[in-house]
Amino acid sequence: MLAEFVGILLILALALLIAAAFLVLHRMLSPKREFAEKLEPFECGESQIVSPHRRFSVKFYLVAMLFVLFDVEAMFFYPWGALFRDLGGYGLAVMAVFSVPLVLGLLYEWKKGALEW
Amino acid sequence: MLEIVLKMLFIVLVILGGMLPLITWVERKQSAVMQDRIGANRADLMGVTVLGLLHPVADVLKLFSKEDVVPTGANRTLHLLAPVVAIVPAIVTLAVIPFGGSYTFGGATLNLVVADVDWGIVFVFAVGGIATYGAVMAGWASNNNWSLLGSMRAAAQMVSYEVTMGFSIVGLFMIYETLQLPAMAAWQDDSFRLLGFIEYLLDIPLPAFLGWIRLPLWGVFLQPLGFVLFLVCIMAENKRPPFDAPEGESELVAGYHLEYSGMRFGLFYTAEFLEVPVIGCILTTLFFGGWSIPFLPQETIVGFIGAGFGEGFATGVCLVLHVLSFLMKVALMIWLQMALRWTLPRFRYDQVMDLCWKIILPLSIANVFVTGAIILWIETVMA
Image (tube, rainbow over all chains, first blue to last red; front, side, top):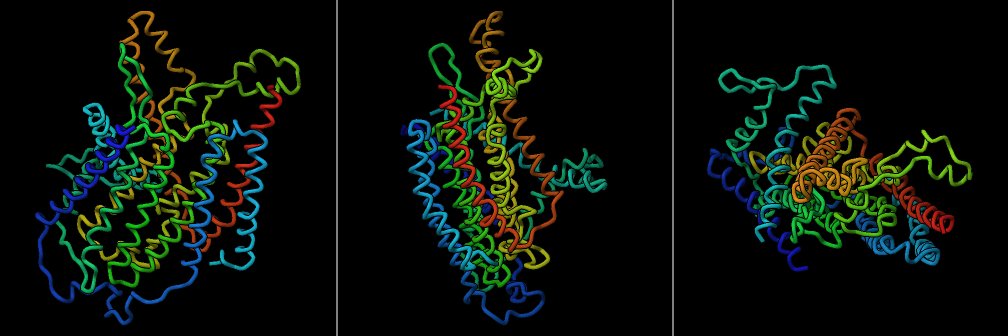
């Protein structure tokens, strides 16, 4: 079992090495001629008048919360799916009961307009 | 240990070193063919253009020689880390992809996957989720309004489609009874009689020639709806057109990588293009039989060639054929993604989110229960 983790760690190290090599090589090959106007954040030719670090729409927070709920629910489906044929009709019935709050929650969000963009 | 290193180098070299530069060329050439243009053919080495195949080389040289600009007020650490976080997950996903089956030479077994883990598909999703951080960090660190808007869109789109992506393939696990990618590929190395169930239900023997119609036992034939839903989700997860609202040139200039130049931008670009063959690998393994060759199961090949040349040689031939079959299927999946990318115009952002939460999510949950009911029904009929 540990041998499998060795493979994953090795490929992670290789991936980091590739990314680092690209960045280091770029640093060595690229020119460096900086001045204040060039370094300004791009704003279609204007100077920046509002800071980007401000409040943004609450919809994004709602989607993030929905994601946490539904992704955890999805994870419960995985082992159940792999064992489904052993569980049989009982398993299907239990998962149907488990899904009722999930589907009701989705319908509630839908009705409340949390899914409108 | 040596075996793991060799397998890792093979898959990384083929996908990152071979397919990736080719895909940047295919992207240009296929768009040219589809739009009745000539396409990329200008890059030349002493007058030799070889069909524009030198363009990937020219790209890399250009990206390396561009100035590395970090805007004022940017968070320099996050700005540097974001492209790394974007590209590393794409490479790491390759660890669990089986690019060949399991072969026995004498007493030793060779399993052509870098890490044969029980939770392979969960690993794919877990690592894929990390790519979201790359987009968010890039937008936040850039100190630019367009970038931040782009990264918020990217985050919301990617987490939404991650949910539906998870639900859309539960039906496959119910059929394969495993979460292990090599086991899934091996399960599909078979075929079934297309009209067998009609014969069974009507209880009359059909004409013999109809019995000859067989299909490979692939996920795409057993879970057609699951395949369509999963394809849409995984393409949206990659943020390429038609799902590129986070980049949306006409609204957000370039989205979250607006303030990136040179190879830092190059890493984002590489990550996006690298996802295309990685998605091809995942689709092939889940839905198109992985390394299997249609209608020629491993035992048949080994038995046929082994009768004349010995079993060791036959297994070796089988290994080479399987790896070639896998790469050809991946190439087909890349062609499919490219064709979709150049056929469909970009969706509006509200359409993207509606498609995810209001269409794909209910359909994929329904798919799980319909699949479950059908499996139970078949099992009672067969029993």
